[in-house]
Length: 470
Length: 71
Image (cartoon, rainbow over all chains, first blue to last red; front, side, top):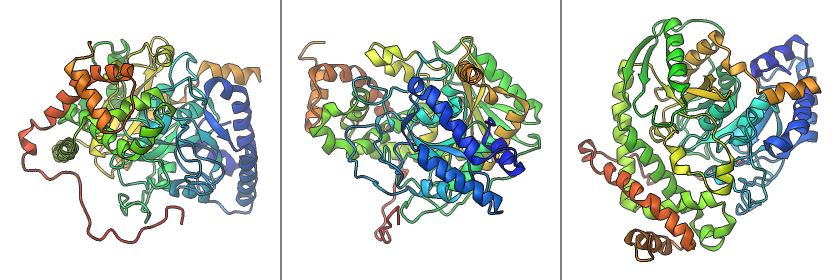
């Protein structure tokens, strides 16, 4: 199977592969690896093969729906799909919610000819950590099965990395697209808040939730964003701003002004390889023609707090009734996070929204001087999973190494992409953030970076070994 | 921490008010993070630039017709 969506789309049009061949390869990979990795909650093998055959027939007849046509695609299981139930990986979610219906983003994928291969694992309700006491797969990282693949869009991240599909949808409220993208060595795009309709998605934070693409490359993400972006009457937060993917196949970064953020992103305990890889990435951007200046993020600590206060309060409003009667049906980590919503007041919530406005205004000033901001996505690689399963690892300590929530609070778009590997062979990731609704600038930078590097094309040894054995 | 630890007592009261039936062990664990959470929240009130800012919230008297997302 081609390694990127873009290559697969080209191969389909060149006649060197078919959607059925791509889908059968995806199914075969899932047959061999999914039990160990925990990518899927449910697979739609028969429906996917039927969709693939339709795509092949349409393409043969000259009916081309665009770059997603015939492409195997995973969907996080907090997004409603008519093809199967939505669980949010929880015992609690009413199984009739969204039954038989497609979320607007899923309907758009289907209209574009994407082949939905199944629903992917998540942290429960898109927050927390795995709970082995609950009857769901524990997602594992294909780079090292003893490590966490990141969350909450765990299965979409591991599935792209393992070749179970070529792209997928994740959601991001505090980093849930970018964290698994980082830990699984793939590319993830959190679009601007309001670019993509989020109706038909089980909410976590109403004012923070973003639906976005996860795939091998920035170019792949651009193709997906073009399909899922644009207003929908059911989401009042979604604005009339469709996205047209710009040409990304060539060009340097001449004229691009890059702000480099280091403050707070290299804490004690950071991976020893991180500073060197980050410097290399910045040097690569410079070599591509960008000009670089060191900057600081305004209200960095306050926005991390605002993200937590807002998410916990908004999520507890949604969950409180169920939590009061079904407390132990929730995962332990979900309980711990959502309980924080009871520890902040209504005034605290509103103050967090005032602080978010202050940060947005300050960022507007920063983005007058630079076009994009770069910083590490995380300051560690994928952590060992065992401690989170037996309760001995400290989740709050891990939070000090996660640098994503700032951007959810302010709503700007961010691209996370691989920038190298740790000494243990685990991926590390770079964030490129930009002005609201300027995803094209991020994607231009990301595409140029990925034409000059190969980090995003590296495949876990587990996958290459299994492919060779097959 | 003892049963009479004021932080634990506060967390216990807040969770009870929200009808969240956390166990004693959970309440004690949540109490460890509570001072840090509150310190972060207090910092949200400290920035003078926020003093006269409107929040990133807007209410609409006419929200428009309700639209079914699968419609």
